[in-house]
Length: 260
Ligand code: PGA
Image 1 (cartoon, rainbow, N blue to C red):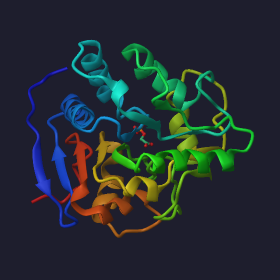
Image 2: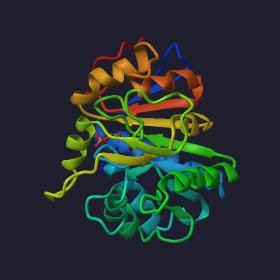
Image 3: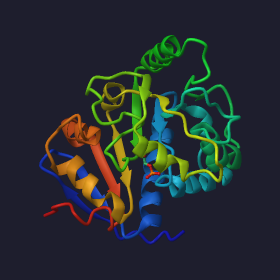
Image 4: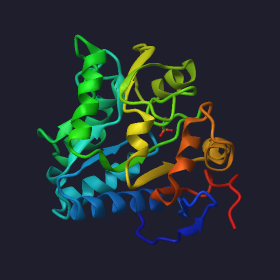
């Protein structure tokens, strides 16, 4: 990865900062830098980070820092953002298994401070409430890094999700199931239900970072940041948090934003 950062920063009318990195690698390094600084400055706090193709480079950068002794991931409480109902770390097509392969195992990050979405619980609704309660018990998230789905979802808060939603079981759209099937070299079906941390839980964080890359996300990123705030585009709720939001993109994803 290059460390030559050529990012351009703009303030939106919502108060959010948009940082357009020169390319995907720079986007990843910038996002990893925010996470690393946060961990160094706020030990003991709760954070959440996303899974998916977008954050792969961020995890690679974090893994390098951890392996190089620059970053200790054991000092924060890390909560996985979402996963399929009935699938856990031992299911190859779970998001937790994806995270394990892309980050936890290469970085040697394991322990009681890594919290997995309780998708295997006998009573998923009660388990979702308990997951929410354990985040709240730590004072809520102090940092939430999020990706943006092609349909505007954040976590698995699909179109229609309410702004004050909490950790819960949700129905997945076919679009999200098809999108995520591409993460795995497997013909196993992607379930039609998931558990996700809620929008309200995420929006309470004093620092929210949205990372978005690729031309296929340009339209939905414009809708999320500069379209109407609507349940049809859950990412648009991020406009309500003002300057607590930092968006880091590559030039392709930013190509439809109106930036001064
Ligand atoms: P992606 O997923 O990074 O694989 O595009 C983003 C998301 O759905 O949140």
